[in-house]
Length: 102
Image (cartoon, rainbow, N blue to C red; front, side, top):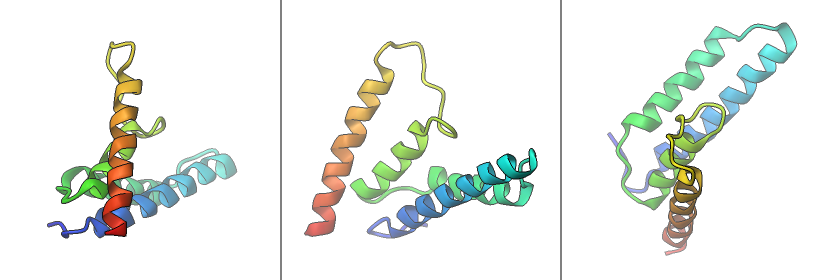
């Protein structure tokens, strides 16, 4: 399921970032990952990755999660993979901000 404005994806991204920060804080505090928090973060990321996007805002969410240096994908052999994907993300974020204003 997806909404026409990708609000669920945007909200899931915010929640995911908070959950991952909490998981990192649990490691800093106790030396161990809080499995419940980590599973919540993983579930949010699964939702983001498996929910179709309807607009640039949702596409930007999906690309930001893929490019996240901590939990995103591993980039391939190309020297400029990060640059290229960063350009796509910047474009989508500009498009998304225009959609919000219209």
